Length: 174
Image (tube, rainbow, N blue to C red; front, side, top):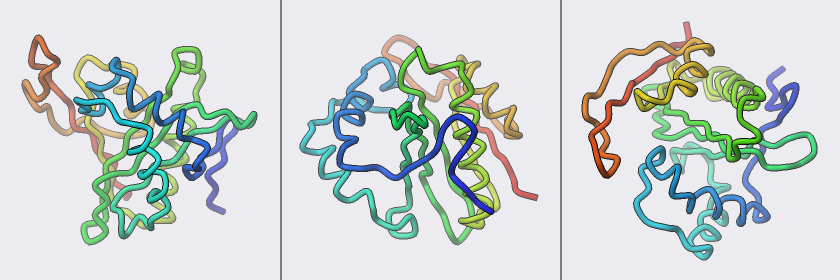
């Protein structure tokens, strides 16, 4: 049976009550490089996004889920993006919001649940992600889930000072 519940966390749909949590993440300049964000988001825009977040993945071509503890605390977000039903593939990304929650296996649990959901429920053939060459924690997380590095995009992102390389990783459902 397919479930979005793990040992320590569960994945759930976005709710209107997530406004402040999403606002905090989207406006955290320290992680803008990860999401390629360049400007802050207003609460108004995030509220509009939340109002439309219930669209079907086949229509929206993306799905964002909240990583939640069993204490009903939002820990992070996990995304499916660039959903391509014809070619049965999608990109995925994981964010654990606070340093205090990192390193506890929440990202691992969330990634495992989402991979199973993508392959079993959405019937996808492959998943991919893009990770900065310097992000050893994320590289390890995805590689431990079976993702393979299939390429390196050289000088792909500009961090304000230097150009940085970015790996492309894939997981093919065999």
